[in-house]
Length: 339
Ligand code: KG4
Image (cartoon, rainbow, N blue to C red; front, side, top):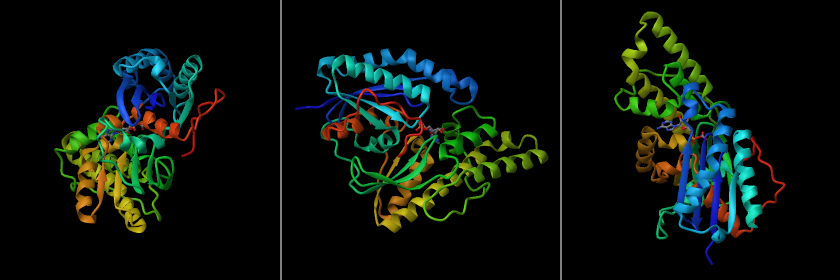
């Protein structure tokens, strides 16, 4: 018999609901929150208020778009963490109330596992282009930079991670220093396309194993711009594209050096990208070049499934449903939920 999962995601500033029938997506609705733009970053209190307003219409639309009836749903999956506490509370409370009133099992999902499992979302039952186990997944978002070894749908292990800032944070904070609006990552990507990536060089961290660090790059970038502006006040304006291209190249070099090392050491050639930063065109192109050089088979999810979305929560919920891995009404969200 088919399994129909209703999934809710509300960990940061996107309210999302999705409906899945087995591994196939029937609907995925996302309400973005423009309210944060004026503040240069996500304001937690405003995010939870917006989730509160959005959650019912978003779930309603997801169920309508999926053309199912509430009675067809087998279970409710929700993001338990990590994320912003106030935001997580809205999705968790809604999921619990929905499960209770409709007498459905409840499934808690780790947001980061879900980013990795976005590779298994099927738009059609015959979609088979999925990573084979074990594979390495570079998970890069606004809050995370990790290399994950994925053993099966429910067993995964971090083998390297950032010791300070995430790659997305490096994009966003450097963009802020340049006077670009939040989130700066997509803008740097756009400007970088017109620039020379070898125009400037920035320092790269020297760390053993597979860990990352981006705080040194952020500082060196800040000092570099400060020194240049002293000599030429219009330096940023006159060199925007070259600065963005050089910065983007440095971030990609840092990410890829460790990924190459991890692939060599583990002998794994199935390589996947996940998280918001995987939308970066430079990163995508570099992965394709490396695939040819190192004989990798690479996987990049569709853009809609790289940023925060409930479809990835639903696919994780589906695998947990098959194992009857349910939680009770006493379950609470956890902002710092461990991987
Ligand atoms: O996964 P995500 O949507 O949200 C969480 O962090 O949970 O990732 C958002 C991050 C932001 O830092 C944003 O600047 C970055 O992903 N990002 C990009 C691009 N698109 C989004 N960074 C670089 N290039 C992009 N095209």
